[in-house]
Length: 337
Image 1 (cartoon, one colour):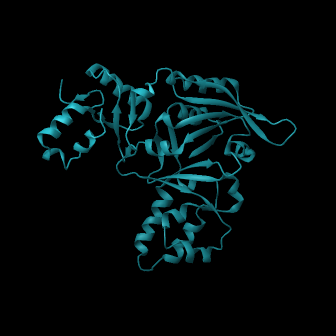
Image 2 (cartoon, helix red, strand yellow):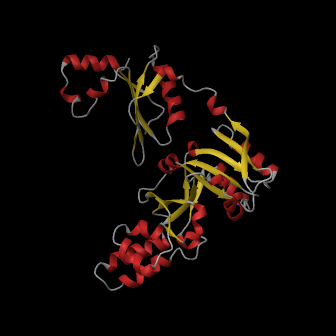
Image 3 (tube, one colour):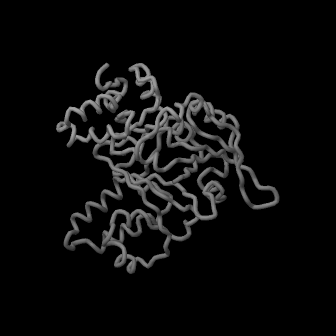
């Protein structure tokens, strides 16, 4: 899924520099621009007071209002690219003097560095001209946190908003692999454009400028630059393949790699692991390398200690190496050669 963040760039330190430093700010509910954001929250706080379980609910309400962080993005909708929504440029990008960031939302969500006490959810905003009393009966008992944070008036529907919800508000760090493109507004300063393009040198990202479609009240965009430094020295596709879907945990990624190259020296495998992390990992990662998929069956922790001699020899022949997230510069060869 792609998500778009429009930036006014009035404060270059806040918008441009945070982009170049791979940072985002998750706002508190009270900092958002819709004064009705707390309408449902305040209503439930009133009707649940002094009821059974009200203490737990009151704690949730307080946490949502004072602690939870929200990072809002716009998503594409059927037949309409978010980047072409004129009102978003007018309202959130300083009348086209700012820019818009295009993220891979899945990579963004998975790559954000979280404290152990923090957590992250992804909600899609529903636009509904609700009657608050009817709403209370239908929705509140199921998912209170999501219910309280993902409903807005239909007047905001042009935003087609999705939200990253954090347990804690504040600055979050993400991996630049989450960046897909930057779009410059019609009236953005050329020097500020250049600052962003140069500042993201080495990051695989495309740059577009917005244009007015001639004779129509519509926008279009065209490619003006592409930072492809990162793409020049990719590992050959015929050298390896990723086995299955990489496991993504809270703090690490786990990769199983089928290596197809002839050179299996420690120097070559160390180079391969380093390049692979650069290209594919956006969290600290554990990498297991084999040259036969069957070897992975014997690496199951439940089986490893009960292998017969033939299976041990097979594993020794086909398990090439392992590199752990906590010692990424070290590659352990199996058996050590």
